[in-house]
Every structure is written in C-alpha cells, then in structure tokens.
Length: 465
Image 1: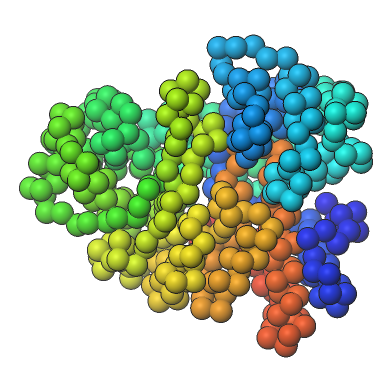
Image 2 (image 1 turned 30 degrees about the vertical axis):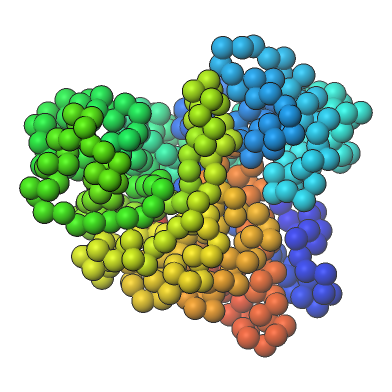
C-alpha cells in the first residue's frame, strides 16, 4: 500500500509536519512485514484452504470487534462464537453492519475499514443499507485464488510470521511449511508455557503429567525443569526465536531447590494455597529467564491482564471471547531478582510489554535505559491504537530512544488485519518523527534511518531474526 493511495490518514493536521510524515512513511510503506509475535494458526497457511465467508474472516476471529458488539447488547452466540450453535454468516455480518456506527474512532473500525478498502476495493461505508452488497463483494473475492491464505501472505509481503504454540505441540504445521519449496516465507513457532507454570491454571496437574510423560523425566522439580528445557530445545530446533509469557504480575522470586521442590509437590497435589501458587508461578518466570540465557530464546513478558473476567461467558464459550481486562502492573521491584541474576547476561533479551500506560515512562523505559537485556515492548492489545501508539512513543523515547524498543508487534489472530495494523504503526512513527524534525530535535537524515530501522533492523536485532 502506498502513501498516494492511502492519503494522509493518521498524519498530523499541521501542513509542514503532515508533508514530512508522508515523506517518511513513503520510505517504509512497501517494506516487508516482520511479525515476531502473533496468534495466527499455522495450519491456515499449511492447508491453504479458502476462507469460508466474510463473517468468519472479519468477525468471529476478532475479539476486538465481538467484545464491543457484546457491550452493545449483542449475544456472542449470534456472532458465531458458540461452537454448539450454527449461525448464518450473513446474519452475523448484518449485525456488525447495524452497529457499525459504534466503532467510530476505534482501532477496530479503522483497521476493518482499511482492510475492506485496500483488499476488496470497498469504498462505501458499512451500514444496514450497504451490508449485503459489501458481504457479496467480499464473499465473491474469497472464491478467487488470490485470496487464499498463501497468496495473501505473499501479497502482504510478510517476511517473518511468528505463531504462538503449546509446549507439547508437535509443530507439524510448521514442519510442513518449512519443507514445502512452494512456500517462501518464514513461519516460526513460539514457546508459550503459561498453563504449565501456573498451579491455578485449569488442568495444571494433567498438563504437567503429560509434559513429564512426553519427555520421560521424573516427577520431581528438577525433572519438571528438565522437561521444560527439553521442549524448549524441541522448539529451538524447529526455528523458534522467542518464548512468550502471559502473566498477571511479573513477580520473579529466586527460591532454593528445597523450597521449590516443596511448592512443586503441593502444586501437583492441588494443595497449594493462593500465596504458594503465586510464589511458584513467580519462581517459574525466574526459571524461564534462566533457560533463555541458556538456550537463547528471546523472553517476552505480557503482564497485567485479568483473563476471562466474566466467569459465565468463559464457562460457556471458553477463553479469548473478549472479556480479558487490564489491571495495574509493577515491574521495578517485581523484576529485581530476575535482573540481579540475568540482567547483564550476554545475549539475554527480555522484552517488557504492558497494558498499563503509567508503567512505560515510570519503569519500562528507565529499565531499558540501563539493562542491556531489556527492551521496550510495542503498544499491545488495548494500546495498539493510533493515539495510544503516539502516547507510548512520547512516554519512552526521551528516556530510552528508539533503539531500545522492540519494533511493532501485531499480536493478532485476524490474519487479514496484519498489514493494516503494521501500516498504522508505520504511519504513527512517521508522524512522531516528523514532529521531531520540525521542532529541530532530530535531523531528517536521522529520521529516515530511524523510520526504516523500526520496521526492519530493530525487530531483527531484538528478536534475533
């Protein structure tokens, strides 16, 4: 997509800044996409089957959209999220169209408009009156070879796409893609062990039992650590670059072997109380850092979310149905044991994300401004919208600069939204740099280099690509 075709969207209203922003954006508008953290199912590309319909493509996979519709009184079952209930996709699409005005000003509304315009040539606004016309246009396009997943992967110029995978996944889809000479992209697995580290996670005991059985390790804390290390090595051998850790708090106590063994036995027996579960969970985050120092996987930490907030919805429809809610995050004290042990370890990369905006300037940027291992994670989840990206840049750049940040991550299951999300970040960064140029704080020569590095050199360095 080019600046000419997209106009001055997301650029400042000041004419001089807007012109410079457009000039900087043109440097990277057509640059390949590096996506080092996301949730696209690798089977989508391995099987390369046509998308079934517009609702499945744009609606049911995107909890950004379904959550706001639910808040407006729409049943999630009517949107196709209830696996035990069939839904007419056109009817679900009409619901979105009827409520489209509610997405004005939201990142979801911007992204979906971008997708409809750039990919399907839809110029009219989605509404109850235009709903069926737009549905038919998209549905017709989805029958064409150019709209199969692999064709879109090439069209989007995706160079690297990282998925998110269970530690016991056999990674067969990744192997299939890696062995296919017709597929030229890089699709990398990512180690996601949360459910195997948290005694309060549903099925924790069964998961650990399967982990130990798969690896042939004994049911001791030392055996448990060896089993996790074995699976990390399995991922590394198949191209993984990082391990992702979704935690409520980045608490990282360092325990001696006896205390850890005692907690492990209580966790397996289901007798660990809330305090014990917290300490065990935190110690395992510490252990994951130790393993990253050893095996080289980049450690990314995504804290501060109360997942599955509405228990009835979770029990009925499962996770990732739109009711994960941010909570406060504290890094400085919580991470000190981990950083005392590993913060200056050669080759260790620790990327800190947040959905608590107050932590960026107060803690994350100062930590990244001292520890060579620490990098500032891009705006994530509720903060990956245009205005929030600008606030994030303002919060972290004066303390840590551009080169202590991670580069953009799209963090999405919605495959077709990937280019829209990356272009949003590129436009936002171009606008931010243009302002610095006009204010005499950065030269245009430096701004050109930075805007290019933000989409290429920086994510390659941080994620060891």
